[in-house]
Length: 110
Image (tube, rainbow, N blue to C red; front, side, top):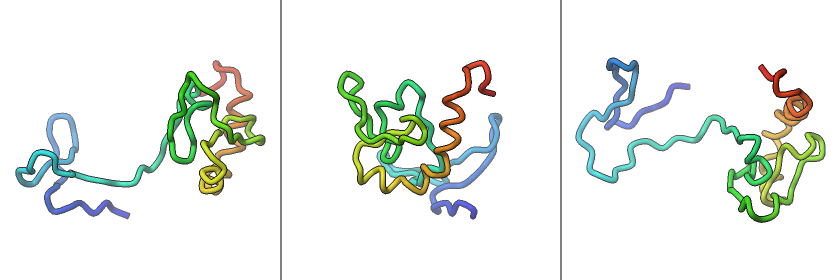
């Protein structure tokens, strides 16, 4: 579906390409646009410390996140059992792919 823009925004073009512009002067501090993210990716080095469900970061000086997926060898981690349960449907789509990527040598990843 197409994004329904608020009336204070319009799509236009400039030398850099298509862009989103204010259709009128907006007061400082105005919320311009709020949308749900479509995708998120966690850097390999951050995976042991970032929850795949809520993306909350754990301290990199402290312990790794407690909830891990045994099917993808711990590539996916969650901050709590409830966060893991809420993320179950999404993770089931990526689980086997994460395991396959983990087994590839770095030069093999396209």
